[in-house]
Length: 341
Ligand code: AHM
Ligand code: MG
Image 1 (spheres, rainbow, N blue to C red):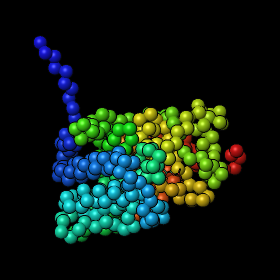
Image 2 (cartoon, rainbow, N blue to C red):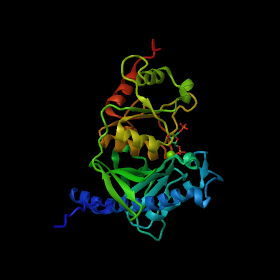
Image 3 (cartoon, rainbow, N blue to C red):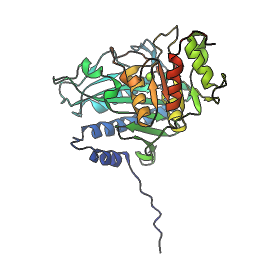
């Protein structure tokens, strides 16, 4: 007798369709958005993989809205996502970390009921040293009445996200997303060009092994942040020391901590009073994923997901990761500074 050794392979398309069935009244728009993002991710993955060979690395001499030098791959990733999403009739507007203003849907295309916000290539300063980079995205429902998306549709607190995710271009390409029904990870099989379900229902350990923070800013941190980092490192004798791991590519640092447990922190400091990372493109989507996986995200004052945004490109301090470790941050950052070593 021939033994059937074939295992059941779940493509991202099949998974998204099955998840959609769990939502009464689903229109299919959100599923299509997720599937289109996966397609854009495959195109970007292909380019990232061949970047060294194609000699397309290097700065373009144009400065993006954050005042940083754009890398060519940033531009490619930005355009790829816009082109993959602008004509589908699912979105009424987009916003990108690489664009100063809202990206409208061109007049010739229909508008839909959602907005998409994205960081096309996070950690791009790491590309030329072969460190993983990633695309981060956030989807919210349109709340204004007009045909086109407006700033008000963008500036909603993270708790209103209906889906969020990232694609990490690492030793393999993975897409991780949540639509509010758990966090699921898919690995790109390059031989067939499909994302296959590899990490269903990811749960973040309640306490983490890893601490990801750039402590070259320590001299600029306030005393409560220093006390928190001493706690995480086991230097105050109150907990076991966490292992420090910092890639400098938020998606890569977050992804490791999501799977293994840990904290990623980018605190405010006296040089950057709002930290560095962007609320709408980086903090909110990863906070939604983290919460769905059992973790928490905090800005030093309140939960990231409760922050009412006031500008598209606003920055936010962030402490994100395993629930109990973020509770520690909440407690230590709230303590009066008097007497803190
Ligand atoms: P980018 O969006 O311009 O790539 O910057 C964001 C990146 C994050 O991926 C990473 O966590 C952080 O910047 C690292 O910053 P620093 O070098 O200050 O530690
Ligand atoms: Mg970024």
